[in-house]
Every structure is written in structure tokens, then in C-alpha cells.
Amino acid sequence: MSNKKVVAFSFIACGAAAILSATPAHAAFATLESGTQVIALREYENAYTVINCGNGDEDFTEFFILQRMMVDGGPPTWVPTETAYLVGRYRLRLSRTCGGYNIYDVEATP
Image (cartoon, rainbow, N blue to C red; front, side, top):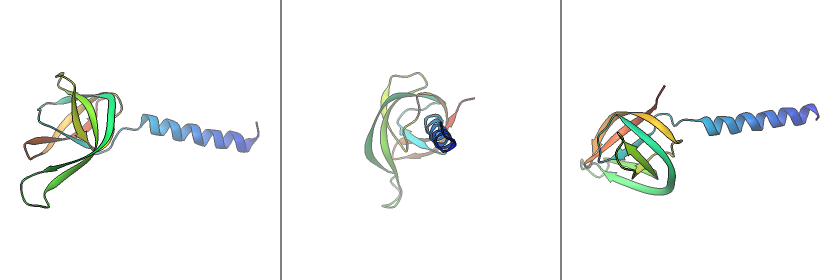
């Protein structure tokens, strides 16, 4: 293989690895449930969801994905998220409540 092909292949491989191993930074999801951990499952779909927080027309939260998740080992449910999470376990940090929903920031577990 020529040097140009090796370099091009290396960039493609590194890019694919970065995409496949990426974790959402500062992403959030909404649920009626309370918890400290979530397991993201493989199933997700594009869906626009707006949750009105009830403090005026401009106080709302938008989500662009619905993904199946299990909060604290509970049953799998569809929850609105800002991004599709990789399958796995994540820590939750309550960011705010909005329209009866808990809005969680999601952090990777070590």
C-alpha cells in the first residue's frame, strides 16, 4: 500500500473509532422516574419532544430522540433524550424539574 493510502485509512479508522466510542457530553434526558443510575438500551428513534416547564412560554426543554432506558433497574421505558446514548450504564445528576419531569444530566460510569 502507498503511504497516502495508509494515511487515509488511518484517518478513517481513527474517525470511526472516535464516533463509536464517543459518550454524550453534557447531554440530558427526561423521565417521570427518580434515580441515580440508568441503563441505556439499543432501541432509539428520532422524535421531537417539547416539555413545557410551566413558567411562561419561553421556559421549555427540547429533546430530539426517544430511547429505551431503565432507571435504577426499573422496567424499560421510552424517554426523550438530547442524543442517542451508547448501550451501557450511566450515572444521573438531577439538573432540574420541568412540567412534572425530572431532567437528568448523564455521566459515564468509571
